[in-house]
Image 1 (tube, helix red, strand yellow):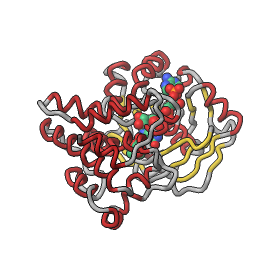
Image 2: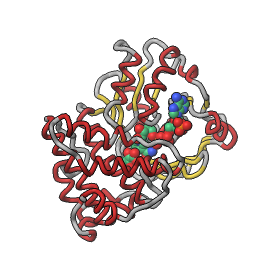
Image 3: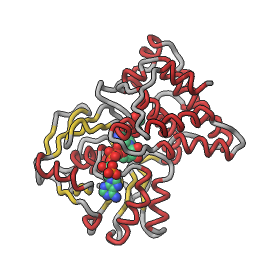
Length: 329
Ligand SMILES: NC(=O)C1=CN([C@@H]2O[C@H](COP(=O)(O)OP(=O)(O)OC[C@H]3O[C@@H](n4cnc5c(N)ncnc54)[C@H](OP(=O)(O)O)[C@@H]3O)[C@@H](O)[C@H]2O)C=CC1
Ligand SMILES: CC(C)(CO)C(=O)C(=O)O
């Protein structure tokens, strides 16, 4: 795992009994794992402690030498640098997998690592937060998705052996566009300061997401992009569903609220830890796509500005009504 944070540690910890795993992360974070072990909670699984030494840790990219597979789990802004660090140490035949949000990470890996390197796109549907150093909590469920093709098949098989639902999907590009629609909520969740279940349980917050998704869907239509269907509801109908009153939404969209009380978006975690966010790879993609087709995505633009303020540490949280007023003014 290159980028041992929430996703890298959760996947690595679950895979550890079934594969030889090395977590490559920041030295301080790896020192915690070496001392206390890696604790995994949630995800409908019993709490698991991977004892110190149960998973190898490293602070540098040299540790990828000889690996069958490298799973890249850094935030999008770190992908290019991670690829440059990786490149001199990869063995022939090592498959590189991007388990990241956004549209461009696999492409960035390919462009740095060269056309002869197999790079596979992956998607993590569920939420993980670090609840304390060395402890990672999975707050929702779903199936990991990977590109179709023989290169990703062994990884899909070992993920399943480790109890992680995983499938190969014939249209990962469509999956990425569909996931981007969901990830438009990352910033809303981060700015709300609320756990995901509480935030998505409130109609005004859902209406904000509906506004953002409508702009995205208009840009997709103009560009001829068809997002894949990831759940029961087609992406084009989701904004209508999101606008339903709370009681009705709870009944008809119970699966959307099947999230435990600790879950937050990965962008919330970035803001909490004073890191720059992935806003350019999420809302930024919609704004750029809309502009390319002569449209404006003004609500997405406004949300980028609000996240920039939050990145500079204003620490402000906003109600759904306040956010809706900002996005629709
Ligand atoms: N968390 C979640 O619930 C989900 C996240 N995702 C996506 O998965 C990807 C990873 O997210 P997440 O796990 O939350 O991110 P995290 O920030 O928790 O983890 C990434 C870790 O990698 C470290 N890192 C960055 N660059 C390097 C490097 N070159 N070498 C070693 N370590 C490095 C980071 O350190 P530092 O911060 O110091 O840079 C950080 O500790 C993102 O694209 C995210 O959107 C997808 C689904 C769910
Ligand atoms: C799983 C989900 C959609 C949760 O918000 C996510 O991808 C993230 O937080 O980055």
